[in-house]
Image (cartoon, rainbow, N blue to C red; front, side, top):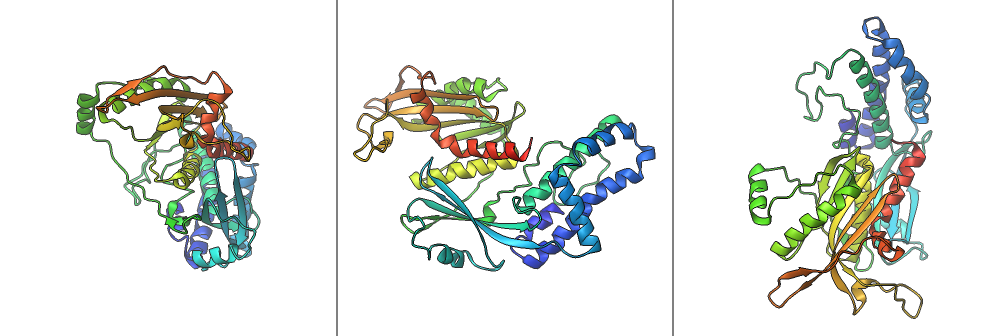
Length: 401
C-alpha cells in the first residue's frame, strides 16, 4: 500500500485515494491485534509497553486522528509543496517551502521562484515535490506513514518474539520486498527521498543535473577476480571509526594497481553495513549536490555511521584571498594529492585520515606518512559531511531512532 502511494505521487487524485487506504490499513493493525489478544502470548506485556511508550508519540496520534477523520468526516486537507534547497558551498545553504498547485510544472515553479531578483544566481538549486497534511505540516506524507509503519513493525516483532516465532506465514507478494520477515529496521525500498520527486539545476550554466543510479549486485566471480588483481583484504571492524584505517589500506592497494580510486561510501546501522555507493560527480556544483543527496540516503536508511574514501586535493593551513575567504586546496599552488578516508557517527565520533601520494614519471604511486585528525586543521577536511551532520541533527530532533 505504501508503494502504491509512492507510485501515485504525481497524480493528486490517486495519491489521495491511496493515502486514505494506507492510513486505514495502518490503523487496522492495532485493531486486529486487539481482537486476537486472547490467542497472543504475553499480550498484556508487549502490547501494554507499546501503548505506554509508542502510542503517545505525535506521529502515532496523528495516524489515529487521521483514520478517524477519513472514516467519519472527510479526506485529510492536503497541501502540495515544493521544498527549494539552494547550495552555494558546504556552509552556505538556504531552504524555503512554497505552496504550489499540484499539477504545476517544475519550469513554472522555477519561474515563480526566480522572479524575485533577490534569489541567488550561483550554486545548485533542488526542487523537491512534497505532499503534506495541514495537521502535520513538518512531515512529508511518505515519510510520516513510513515512520508509523516502522513503529507497527516493532510492535509485531515484539509479539512474534514473545511467541518464539521469527516470521509470518505469508506467501509470495508483489512487490518482492513484501516478505514474511518482520524487520524492526527501515526497509531500503521505502525511499522517502526518491530522485523521481526531485529536480536539480546548476545556476551557473543554467543546465539541469540529471541523477542516475545504477545497481550492481554482488558477483562472487568478480570478487575472486578483484582478489587476484589487488590482493586479499577484509574489513573486520564493525564500527565506522575502526573500519576507516582498514579501508585506507584497501584503497592504497587499489590506487597502486589502477592509478585511481573511485569514491566509495559505506553506510552503517547498529554495527552493520547497510549500503555501499560509489558517488560520481563531474564538477564542484555536482559535488555539493551529491553530498546533499548522500545525506538524503543516510536519512532514508537511518544510518548511524558513514565512511567515505575519496581522492582529493590537500594543502596545509588556511590561506585566504583579499576578501578574507579561504582559498580551497584545489586552487592553491602547494596542493598535494591525497587519499582521504573520513568516518563519522551519529553519536558524534569523527575521524579524518589523509594519505599523501605522488606519481613518478611512469605513473607509479608512492605514499607519504598518513596524517590523522590530530589537529583542527585536518578535521576541516570533513566539510563535505556537513549535510549529513545536519540531517542527523534533524533526525534527533524528531526522535527518530
